[in-house]
Each structure stands twice: as C-alpha cells, then as structure tokens.
Length: 61
Image (cartoon, rainbow, N blue to C red):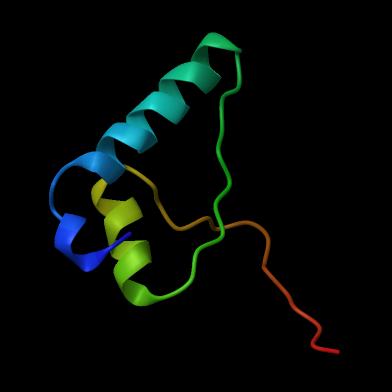
C-alpha cells in the first residue's frame, strides 16, 4: 500500500471483506505468507496469529 494511504482503514476493510466472504463459503482458515515485519504486524493487529504447524521454505534458482 502507498505510505500516504497507510492508517486509513483500507487494509482492514479488505481483510474483513475477504474473511467475511470466505466464511460464507464455509472456509474456516486463511494461511498467509507476507514479507517484512511491518506487514506481519498489520496482519497480527487484524487477528492473524503465527502458525505453530508447518514451515515456509524457499529454493532460490
């Protein structure tokens, strides 16, 4: 998101829209991969928690 739009509530509205839509489709969990501490903090403030199971791995070519 553009820095001048941060804190305006757009991201929170998007997270709420997606989660509400998925609930209506009987999806009960969202897995998210994000980059950077600031993005992780945003999602944690909006109810996401760090998963205890699994691990993200990458292989650079």
